[in-house]
Amino acid sequence: MTGLSDSFQRPVNYLRISVTDRCNLRCIYCMPSDGVSLLSHQDILTYEEIYTVASAAAELGINKVRFTGGEPLVRPELPKLVRMLAQIDAINDISLTTNGLLLGRYAAELKQAGLQRVNVSLDTLKQDKFEFITRHSNSLSDVLKGIETARSVGLNPVKINVVVIAGVNDDELVDFANKTIDEGWHVRFIELMLPVGVSATSAQLVSVNDMRKRIKPLGELEPCLPSVGNGPARYFRFPHARGTIGFITPVSEHFCFCCNRLRLTSDGKLRPCLLAENEIDLRQPLRSGISSEGLKQLIKETVAGKPLRHHLDEGYMPKDRPFSQVGG
Ligand code: SAM
Image 1: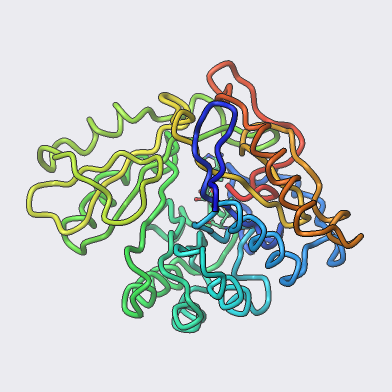
Image 2 (image 1 turned 60 degrees about the vertical axis):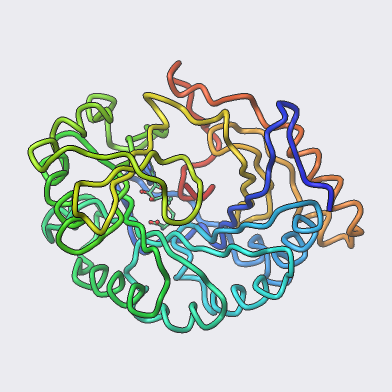
């Protein structure tokens, strides 16, 4: 194994795999209000095709994968795919990002299949706001139960991702921060990015400095290391808290200099960056019987196309796909 690195000498060892463009929620900052046109089933990579890509990527140096979507748990038999990828020797870190609605149902099976940990996206602890943000009348209590089940079956650390939106959920920063003290939650506050067509506006961006000011009454935050993973968040904890608080700042302070990711979309495009439109199609070559060497060449070309950084600060957002179709 030689290891992959891009043209800026950044090592690339992490593949995020979107298994579906479908979602059981319609979050205001993620999906356009008039919805998105959905891919047909034959456009979506099969589990065998995903396995082929992951195996080739692993031979090149990818050792970490995360399933995302859409909502990955709406795709039937996700544990089967987890089990398949867990059998690839070089892959030693398998995780999932989910909205948590179906997590209670699948957590034990996923753990047994080889999933190691899970991130749950949850932006509010209030049912009425949950319905407003997700544009759905699903029950917040299902998500909370999913979090508890995931923790109890050992999908740890369960990290809670909170996209902070001014005037919507910024009044709950203290409530989430308290969860790190009272219940040992690992909470990560994420700055809002603004894809084209969504109903949030730039006035709703809350900077990390503001977030820190809001939770200051709870105590002095002490810097700490993440318990697992070395992603883009900077971590802190309150004295005596079992849990941690992470801040992810794609807008105010980008972390592209340490980006180690590739993204596979559910329709088989390999993308070097969430926030750039260049992508390389793998589906057609896969379905035409491309060799493992050919596939590895396409993966290397994608890595070579990784841009130095995104340009959110100059207002640039990719227009080709909403986040629900790339896997945020
Ligand atoms: N359905 C899964 C979930 O909810 O976690 C996985 C897909 S979702 C697109 C992945 C993550 O992207 C979620 O944590 C979501 O909050 C985040 N996300 C989506 N749109 C975003 C935006 N405009 N700004 C910041 N984060 C965003």
